[in-house]
Amino acid sequence: MTQSDNLDTADRPLPLPFVAQGPLYTPGRVMQDSARPVFRLSNNESPLGIGELAAQAVRDAAVSQHVYPDPDGMALAEALGEAHGIDPSRVLIGPGSESIINWIILGWVGVGDEVLYSAHGFQAYRIRAMTAGAMPVAVAERNLRIDVDALLSAVTERTRIVFVANPNNPTGTFITPAEIARLRDGLRSNIMLVVDEAYYEYVADPEYSSVLQMVDAKAENVIVLRTFSKFYGLAGLRVGWAYAPRFAVDALSRVSGPYAVSRVALEAAQAAMRDQAHCDAARRHNDIWLAWTNEHIRSLGYETTDSVCNFVTMKIPGGAEAAVAFDNKLCSLGFVGRLAHQNALPDWLRLTIGSPEAMQTLIPALETLIE
Ligand SMILES: *Cc1c(COP(=O)(O)O)cnc(C)c1O
Image (cartoon, rainbow, N blue to C red):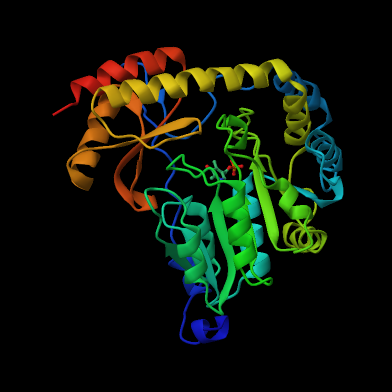
């Protein structure tokens, strides 16, 4: 359907039907007017907050806000190039990786094209595909892990992009770089593989590693995404980046236009990268409290995934309805979690690794909810 078909009989300037009827992202719930302290464990935000160096960069940048930022964030791209041993001219900076996901969709898919994603993957892939009039295709996982064979067998001639988050949100699980390579090798060379590494910095498992270097391979069909929102504690500023083949960076720059990322955000991200003490603390905090929380939740008898991220994901006994009741009760005890119903896991609850106090009080709260 074209826009003129849509408007023939309309009395208002209607948006495209797949935009008007497209799904809306549901943010984690925010508790207001609560009498007791509320631990917001719904958005995978850093319990350590913004680091000292980044906070100082924000203050320093305050006085120069009348000046446009660097049009494509080259200074940050160069810092990332140096830190990761990658080509800065192929780093694309965006206002959060969520926006870059949207730019990839806008650049590569049209109405009726197919976008594959792993069934319990991040919901932005499905939502953004639908809003562009494309067909999101959910591909079954195996034991809450990405299933490369299933993804490969779901490919059709209309497939344009395959999205995987590795490790994945909300399951917290990962597949090895060898599995990602097998996925890439099995795809037609004109299908883009997007590997979203939003939780890369947290992963301690030696079997895991980034596939940034895969972007340098001859086959120019891999884009890797990263974000400053989680580990670096800059979710409010909106900075993410992609490492992509040069022709893809070129296309994405045309979609994004200049000045997509603010001066404050660019400065803060560079400072956050330099703040080794803050990064070490974030990593140490997560290593300790992820293991501690998972172990304690399991010892209460709940099933959890093998999360390597900054959250735990637990199964609520009794099915989807029981999970909604459980989530509400936990909320009334002061802990805001995130049900994974939008990721086709309606009886699983994701809880961010918060402060020591949050985790230590969460366990007795969960204990009171055992039926
Ligand atoms: C949080 C998250 C993002 C989005 O991060 P922003 O950079 O804040 O837009 C992307 N992918 C996954 C898997 C995430 O969990």
